[in-house]
Amino acid sequence: MKHFSGILTILALFTGSSLFAQDPYIISGKVYDSVGNQPLSAATVRVKGTAIGTTAAEDGSFHLRTSQKLPLTLVVTSIGFKSQEFLVSGDGTTGISIALNTRSVLVDQVVVTASRVPESILRSPVTIEKLDLRAIKESPAPTFYDALENVKGVQMTTLSLGYKVPNTRGFSGTTNSRFLQMVDGVDNISPGIGAPVANAVGPTELDIESVELIPGAASAIYGLNAINGIANLKTKSPFQYEGFSVYQKIGVNHVNDKDHNAALYSESAIRWAKILSPKWAFKINVAHSEGTDWIANNQRDQYFDVGTQDQRLGCRRQSCCGPHQPLWRRVQQRSQDAHAGWQKYDVSRTGYLEKDLTDYAVKNTKADAALHFRPNAGTEISYTYRIGVVTNNYQRGNRVRLDGERIQQHALDIRAGDLYPQGLLYQREHRQ
Figure 1 (spheres, helix red, strand yellow):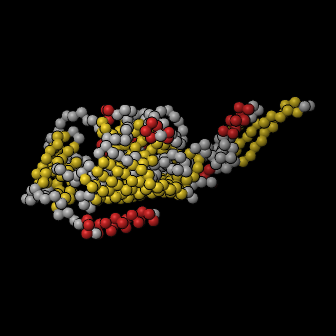
Figure 2: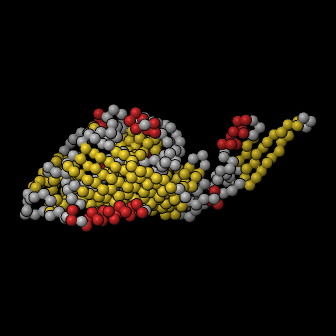
Figure 3: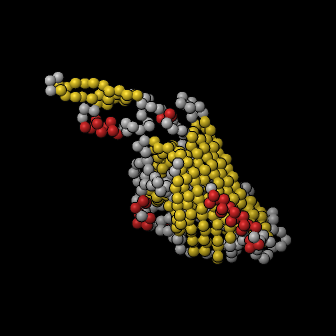
């Protein structure tokens, strides 16, 4: 966590320097539906003619800091409502009430994953599914990552309590190394495993803006690792989503389980985003989850007749030395004696229980910090540092214990009009 502490120190120096002096005006108010007087969360409030803006909270409230001279004009937009302009003068900059009128529109969403440039989802050269912010909020899934299972053409393979793998195009497997997962256009795989460790080093639900998913081959643009598809997790910009957010989720598993008492599963996350000036902003995310994984305790006696080659291969497929072995194994073998003919004999040995070799505690701690710079209205440059530490059970031919695996990433993202270059500057993985 030394790298993360260093970034926090840099951000603190930026905040305290005279370069980012406090803006003279704070504009606040509330956005609501003019018909039902219901608050409009996620409504966008922007200063006309500039890149300064924010997003309304769950209760429709918004807070905006600007150095623009009064009077100025706010442009308020929300999906399914007519855009409205509101003049702010020196008479009052707080307690503003803005009502939006509904309208019927054919929503034409914009995606960048299909061709790496902003384009209409209807004009995308490939089939692309999008899980936007509203769909994520309305999903009954525990997390936005679990909500991917509801996307057309996607099947989620559950390897453990905190480890799920997206599967598309019918290619079944516990790793699915040919499915590419990215965060803001940057590869999110574990270098050691060769596949993403679920969302162990990805964004939290507080920072996710949308998920763009191609359930078919995308190797022409993203290389061989995308032959089964691609999922691009897009995060929120601190310029558009400012403020402090926190959530706590608690659940229970192992209910009526003979192998373990009922156990709690908890997930906590915080997000802090701040606009330092019209050109500079930063955000910090921290999350922690922990629980008790499912327990493999199959003690059924297994019996194999290895008199033929196929049966011998079947025995090998049981991974005779793996930690998931049953308590007892009996193998019937045949031998041929020139005088006595075929003989039968049984060979038995004791096995061992998986719980004697591993731990079922599942933990994931992750954090990221990003510094964003907007030199002009059409350009945004950001540097992001991510770190994730995961303790989990990884299911393949047998179960592998990931004990304190740490993954770090440094990424640079430049967005200028149709130019979307994104790159991974440095990635490191450490296992205990």
